Picture 1 (cartoon, rainbow, N blue to C red):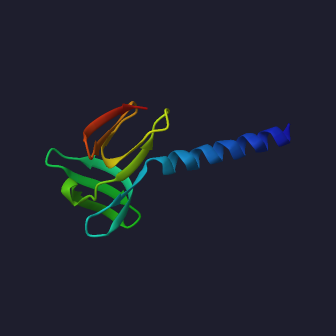
Picture 2: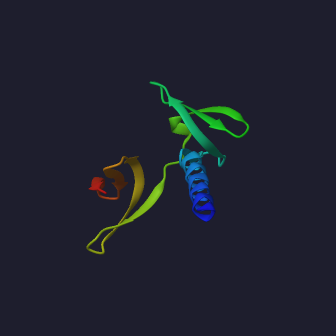
Length: 104
């Protein structure tokens, strides 16, 4: 019984660590700076506020370097481009032949 309790406590501890780190996001800025932290908010002007280990940092959405991605499709095709948007359901990528929306 004691072993089972210890295993459950270890699993619970790992789950808490994973939950805390999953909210973090890393932004690479056009300047080359890298900002890692939890997004506190984004206002209507595109100003991001990020809680980092050294305090709150704010920057404009235009300061973020676009994410270059390669997406591999089920049929074996590959798309390269700039990630425009990612949600729970889709990826939007700006490719050499236009904007493409793909279901996850």
